[in-house]
Image 1 (cartoon, one colour):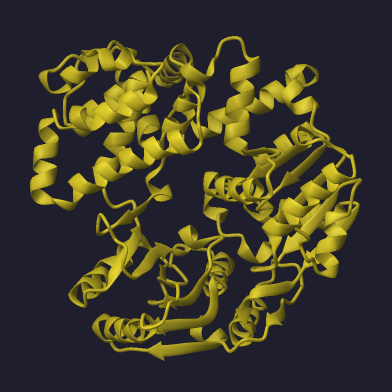
Image 2: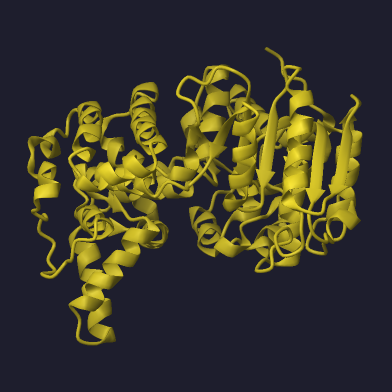
Length: 526
């Protein structure tokens, strides 16, 4: 099927040689352009699909692009930086194998530091113990993965056939990359490199993203392109988002064009208190759900959802919420990892269950409440689905969970749901066991949409933070609490907070509802 492209999209698609930068405004068809460029390269025999590497910023973006390609009936090499690092280390470092690499989350990394300090006499000894534990048990933080990958690229580049076979590299969401990710791009050293992103949507400075690196590449590459036609949002939404972002200095001075001529609107309201604001949000939602439209409530911080969730429940409005509230989900993930051979995960479970680690070693912990760790489940390495089917039963052996369920009955359903999601991942993606460890290691709470109803087939509202909304779109978007000290956040950088607000506004197609309870400097800018 012939895909219609605008002039600038077509220029990007047909650019076949050299290093290029693409600034892609919200709703400008960025993913479509990536897909069509890949098709163009293959159709014109410039590369085979397995000679084209697409690198995305998140696992979510990776899966979205994979789905788009599958609809077209083909699939190039699509990876995140971390999955590419994981795969390369597993293939080319003799010490490691996919099933032996254990990726630590932040809490596990903190725990290993506590263990190392406990058994150390001084700081130098602590560093050595920490390194030894990680090396002995193939424990990697996400940063470790990238560092080790960088070392491989420096020392063994000529031997890395999975990298050397690549003729074209395309890197998505480049405004959110950090220094080491840019160093990895340089070391891959593809003569045909495309970086694509949007300086106005850079929202991960707190995580180390280096906006200046993308800006520098943009001004120094062989050719620059600007995808500025927004096909998502109506005129008023684009007008207020342009009005907002022009106040930032750290941007490429490109204004987004309106192509969607359908009616759109924005509503701004200031309230005396949160109760009044919530009533306004609920009343407008009640009007909207009479039509078949997609609605989202987008928040600066996760904790803001509590009062809104209560109001939605009172009014029998069903909702989906993207959350990291339920700490017990971390335990589920730790169990996943433990059954996959991650010894540190056992310590993490023991720590969460308030068991003192008096004798620090890395043997399997024996305890009546952790008895399942000694059962044959651990050895079912060839049948990961069977493992998942048994994890829920194993968790119920922990006394801790009887308290969790008593205090929060919803937790039992949520734990059951996360296990089903993991199982579906394995089935739907036809994953091999070699990939099982990576799936378990990278499974995060933030990637899950947790429904408040098990069979929620009626109308629902999506609730999420602005960071979680990146890449999504809705007919109508609500952004409450645009208050000074919250949005913009008192601990944030003003220009990045403005970009956050910009991202939230540009999720909307037809209407955006913006409200504040206290004084708001951002409302004055739109």
